[in-house]
Length: 139
Ligand code: CDP
Ligand code: MG
Image 1 (tube, rainbow, N blue to C red):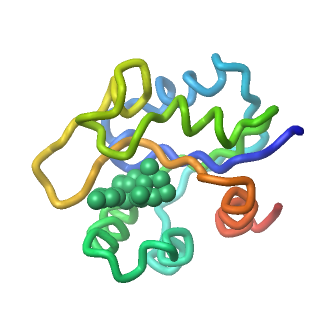
Image 2 (cartoon, protein in one colour; image 1 turned 120 degrees about the vertical axis):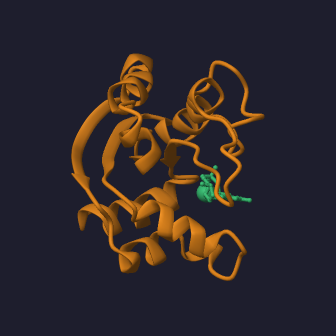
């Protein structure tokens, strides 16, 4: 079934001029950009987006980091794009994310209390619908 997922190029990716490089991984795989915008997200938006992590030690640093500069929000669509995009991204810790993935190839630990791992991707079809609604006010 054709799905949609929310991808974010996080502030570290924008700052490092990696927007094109990151989005090219998804486009080259064959996924299609359905919508795209650049914005500096508010704390309010991010607290909704990262709701599941409220109360965890990295929550506040994460919200501060994500609102520290512009991000690129993209709706990608394609067959099984939710799973496919997660696979292209690699695991959360950029130091140990496998080579060949976006986080593994372009990220590393910067010794700060936040994982700057370049990219966000929805973790399920349900999360994707929720997140697309938050970022684009649509399903
Ligand atoms: O983004 P992903 O779904 O891979 O990871 P998550 O567990 O949902 O965490 C969301 C984000 O919080 C991560 O992408 C990291 O940027 C950050 N994080 C962190 O800084 N330290 C952790 N121990 C876990 C997550
Ligand atoms: Mg997650």
